[in-house]
Image (tube, rainbow over all chains, first blue to last red; front, side, top):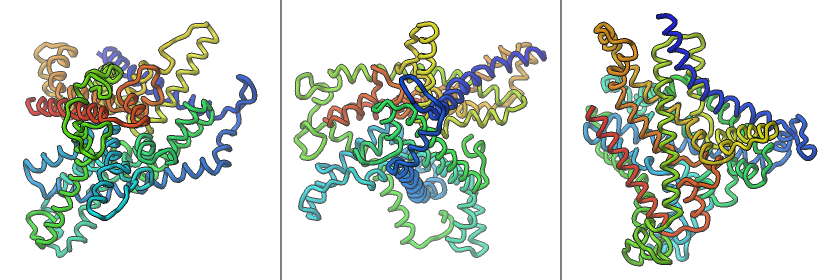
Amino acid sequence: MRTQAKLGLFLLLTPLLLWLSLLIFIPHIDMFVVSLRERIGVAEYRISPANYLTFINEPLYLRTFLRTAVMSIIATIITLLIAFPVSYYIAKIARGRARSALFLLCLVPFWVSELVRTFGWMILLRETGLISNLLQFSGLADAPVEMLYNDAAIMIGLVYTSMLFMVVPLVTTLESLPDDVIEAGYDLGGSGIAVLREIVIPHAMPGIVSGSIIVFMLSLGNYLTPTILGGKDSLWFTELIYSQFIVRFNWELGAAFGFLLLGLSSAIVWGMLKLTGQSLEKTMG
Amino acid sequence: MIPSIPQPRFLTIAYTGYVVVFFFFLALPLMVVAVFAFNDSQFPSLPWEGFTWNWFFGSERPMIGVFHERPILRAIGTSAFVAVFVSVLSVGVGLSNAFLFNRYRFPGQNLLYVFMLLPLVIPGIVLGISILVFSSRMANGIWDMAEWDIEALRPGLVLVILGQFSFIATIATLVIGARLQKFDRTLEEAALNLGANRLTAVRTVTLPYLMPAVVGAFVVAFLMSFENFNTTLMLVGSDAPLTIAMFDRLKEGSTPLLNAVSLLLMIGSSCLALLMIAFQRRS
């Protein structure tokens, strides 16, 4: 019996270990090794932090990096602010059929590829687009208005694309808050704001954290939305990685960029977990 | 603010209004994409030139519809091929992981669980380049040592499948693990008492119970693979899956053909999702 259990454990461990080591750990270690190489001749390399120094010394790279981080944080905050009231409505105010219907409606756009969603915004925002035509028709503008290729367009795209990943965890945590607790808050004389601050938000914290982590990650690592809605000069860090790898074929620098992006996202995720006292198992699992 | 606590009328109306505007915001881009698939013009924009089915069924230039556009059809086939492989692999590994974390206790288990979650917090593009770097270096190393060229390690469909699998497996594990956790172990013990061996008990009692989660994980994996862009972008070779093919066209300038493809995608994925919900209701 014991040997059988051991055999079972071994059989079940094998796929997990193969997956994690061959596709996650070894590739990332290898990428780090490559990022520490400096080319000194044809197929000749030496170990040096040259690629990271290039990153620090070139203002364009550093600026793009910081800009991507700040824009992703702003996108996360906007998504949270828009999604919270809607999630609360679905979880606590809508009842029965209406609730499941609304929840399902939230999911629908995300069964469709991100490319399609971004394409939709392109049709709406561009110079010959729907909104531009609408403005001209209503007399608010007298020439075509270009609304693509700026930061606001990128922001709209990012918020739209990641909305679902905020709404779902928020609805799930808010649903588990009993109505009685909210009523008790009011009975004890709390105002609507006080109840929100003292009861609802603390209860929803795990949902807020996991939603924010996912939205931040998706924004930081997004390539499609900044490229299509932001145009050539959108300066998103993933675009730098792509161009180093595919266009310039400078894998050493590209690997360093990849590692920096990974470091930034890990640092912010870790910071967010520590700040709110949550753990990765609880928020993701 | 809950229905049992009276609120000022104005506040309730404003709140409902906000939710309505939100859903309008959600639906708007998709509606626009769908409507312009039927515009009788070379551009998916105003003015409206009249209704046409040509972007689906047209067979002559300049309006070749989806069903006559070879490269797009081939890309759909490639995507479906990749998605089936990714789903089968992910569900298989997901099942194994779910049993491992639910049924066994071993040293380092918690740490391994955290490692299993990591692919979710690694940006897709970083997953893509790390696998690209590693596999290319392996391929070069093997070539230098033995002069074997291993095609599978060069950018192409094998790497796309592995890259997508590397994070979709986590999602499959979570979906299946959640249901396994709710399983009543005494049912399995009853089967053992009735003389079944462990494998038979799992096959005839536990697996049927897990079926809704397995199907759910399969559909989710399929859709995620079909939609994936970031990881695929870095690993793609000469056979482009649909999202990459559409992206290349979008960069060159868009025709309503892309709207037509998008509309078909929307219909396809909605059907799949509805099918999954129906299946889970039944069981």
